[in-house]
Amino acid sequence: MLKTGYIDVLSIVSRKVYDAAAHLIETASSLIPANTFCIANLDPDNTKVIKAFNREKVMLGEGLVVANEESYCALVTEHMKGPLVIENNLTHPLTKDMDATEFVGGCSFLGVPIIDAEGEMYGSLCAFDHEYYSYDPKDVELMVALSDFFTKLLEMEFALNQLRQAEEKVAMQMKEKSNLLAVLSHEIRTPMNGIIGMTSLLQSTDLTEEQKSYVDVIETSGSSLLSMMDQILTYSKNEAETIELADHPFQLSELFDYIGKLFTPEANRKGVQFTTELDANMTLIGDSNKFRQILINLIGNALKFTEQGQVKLTVHVEAGAGDTAVINCEVRDTGIGIPEDRHELLFRSFSQVHDEKASGKYSGAGLGLSICKQLAERMHGDVWLMESSSEGSCFACRIIMRQEQAVSV
Image (cartoon, rainbow, N blue to C red; front, side, top):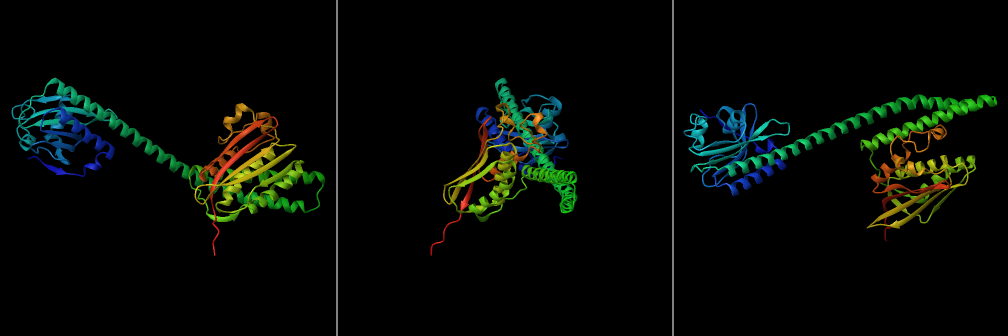
C-alpha cells in the first residue's frame, strides 16, 4: 500500500527558493490548463512535494512524502531522466500498476527533471490533469524552461550557502587567531617586561659609556617589541570584531594635554617642534582610549619620519546631528613625505611604504595606519592622507562622538 506522511516544507529549501517555487507553479498554471502542478524534491528514499497548486480537484498536497518506488517524480528522474508525458496513467506501462496511480486517480501527466547546483537530480516539476489534458510540445518546452530557471535558483542558493559557510569558517579562524595572539602577547610580554625592568635597574648602576649604550639598545629593542605586539593584538581584535568601544565622558582638553606631554620629550630629543591646536574644549562621550590611540599612531608616524622642522596636531570640532559632535583632526609634518606610487599601500596591513634602504631605519609592523582606519571606522569616521610631498605630509581623521549636554537648573 502507498505510505504517505507530511513534513515541514520550509525545512527542505530556504524561504527564497520556496517562494521562487511558488512563482514557478503560478506561471505554469497560468499557461498550461492542467488541474494540478507541483515541485517535488527527491532524496535516496523518498519524494517530497514542496509546493503544489490545484485548480478544481485536490490531487496533491504540499508536504506530501511518498516512497520513491511509488513516485511519479522518480519515474521522471530515475527512469526517463528527461521529460515524461503520459496520456493516461491508468493504461501507461510505467504507472498502471503503481499504488500512487490509485492515490491521485486517473489523469494525464507531464514531468520534467530539475538538476541541482552539483549536477545531481533535485526532483521534478510536474503537471496532472484528471480530465486527461493532452500536453503539446510547447507545454513540454515551457516546463523544461521553468525547470531550468529553478535549477539556476538552486545554484544561487548553493552559492550563498557556500559563501555563508566560508564566512563562518573565516570568522572562526579569526577568533582562533585572536585568541592565539592574545596568549602569545601575554607570554612574550611577561619576559619582555622583566628584561626592560632589569635594563632600568642596570641604568641606575655605574656603567661605562659603552655599557650604557648596550643597555639603551636592549631597552629600545624591548620597548619596540612590546609596541609591535600591542599593534598586532589590536589589529587581530579589530579583524575579529572583538573590540568593544567604551562609552564614558571625557574632557577633550585633558586628552590634548596627555598627547602634548607624551610627545614633547621625543620631539625635543630630535630637535623637532611639536605643537597642538584645539579650537574648542568640551565634554565628549565615547571611547577616549581608542581616540587617543588613533592620534598616538598618527603623531608617532609623523615624528618617526620627520628629522627637522615640525609636527603639528590640529583639532576642529563642529556640531553634528542631534547631540553628536564631529571631531576633525589633522596631523601635519615636515618629514620625508610618501612617494605617490606608494599611497595605495598606506592603509594596507603589514605593508611598508618606504623603500628597502629606509626600512631598517623606519622599521615597524606596518599596522599603525591600518589600525587607525579600523578604529576610526568603528567610531563612524575615517582616516585618510590629505597631501604629501618631499616637504612633508598631512593625515586627516574624522570621528563622531556624543556631546555631554549641559543640565539646566
